[in-house]
Length: 254
Image (cartoon, rainbow, N blue to C red):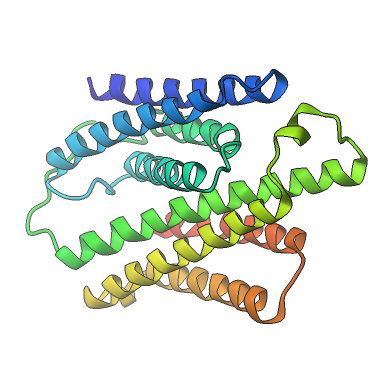
């Protein structure tokens, strides 16, 4: 039953991506269904995390599979919030396949504990630190996806491919870079709170804490340069993508 829930969630995310591509190549009539399907996937992910959390007796972030599902749920959450609120609906075409891949990888043999051990004496600050820190990565992941969109749009403009369906469906550059910066700020804000919870639980001795702290400082530096000194949207997008890829190393030391 638990596996079936993830399969359905992955299928809905994949279908959302397919319809997103179809809306770009076609007349756009199916664009709204990308968000509907992502909402359905979000619901099944939430059900899985709820049941898994009951089995664990804590936030389900104890193995690689759980982390991937939680990260996919976080990315989906921010897509539904930002894509709908700021009319960057094309984000679904880019983020839905990523969500599907995360969920499918989470189901690979060895990724999920077959018989999860129930946790006793759960630390409140530890729970908050883990959940909010991973939640921040959902915002930063979607920020990186938005940055990829901007780089593709920049490439289309420079190559003169102005009649392609993808170019016609792309939001303006200022809209996309606004999403990149906004999502990065949200991610850094959540990560700041997560690191604060880590300090409260005395997690400074863990390697993952120091990696997360380095990631936080790097993002702060990037945002500081953007707001104070300024840089081109293309360069900002390149740094956001590279920094997010590098920041994934935190999961290697959990």
